[in-house]
Length: 294
Image (cartoon, rainbow, N blue to C red; front, side, top):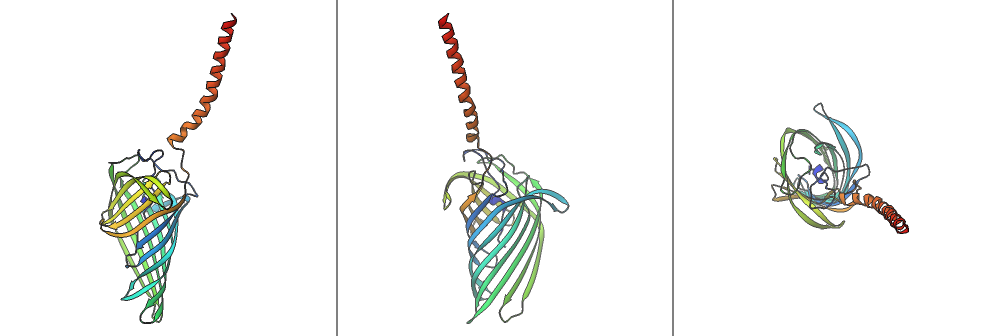
């Protein structure tokens, strides 16, 4: 199952790109749409779009540990090609998902996804092909040493206790359905580093970004270029070991309204200073006129 990580959206700086990354400010209605090219663990190549949207906050328990979380809902669709049991398959894919981000560490503490493939298998004649994969992953944050604010050159570690269950049902025309289930649990060490400032151009526009490198002990590497203006990554590349590319996302559009930046916060002050300066000038003029009369 390709990983959907909260790191895609987690880190936001307010103000200029070349500055510290502060805690984000997400609200219901924030959303991000990406073009996505991905490779599933089965070897299927997927192309299409993914949309993420903040819909609520809620309490989630992981191994009896309570987390106050941000609820992120995901929908996606597109086309796929691949090989299954030695035969070419192709068709359409759809996905729905839910992520809960811990509001303190901003790690995903719960992830639930359903990915459906519908198409044809070529065995000399076309056969209807159907595959559904459901994944539920829970992560308990054991250590959080990657915290805001941070800047280029900073790094930190996070430790997660993770459990995962994945079920798969495949139906091929003329054959009996096959169902499998896989469980996994263990520790995952994550290393973050803020590598550089970078200007990134995508369909949504040109953005000044921070380049965040995220590496998991299981080999997953993510290069995330995020913008304070967007409140999310504008380009996200994932690979195994930094060599085998498994997904590339580019921002198409977004809706995000964070708290005012330090630059914007100066405007209300200016509006107050103008009338104050006018009043002071009038007072000084009146004093000058009074002195002249004397």
